[in-house]
Image (cartoon, rainbow, N blue to C red):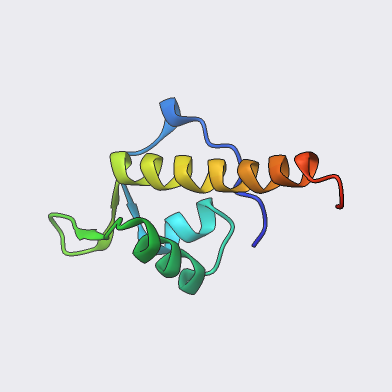
Length: 82
């Protein structure tokens, strides 16, 4: 999976559809689904029936994925055999 891009949390909308989050994170919907299941972040329905994520959940998932990426980079830097 490619690195999760930087997101300015101050400019976020209150709600993102599943498609918008996949695009925002530069990942497929299937990859997003797997990460959501792994980190127990579930989409919700908004008041007009769309499935997606509130800002809090997008930020939480982004933070987890961002640190997951950074952790793998650090592990490579700390591995004398890499």
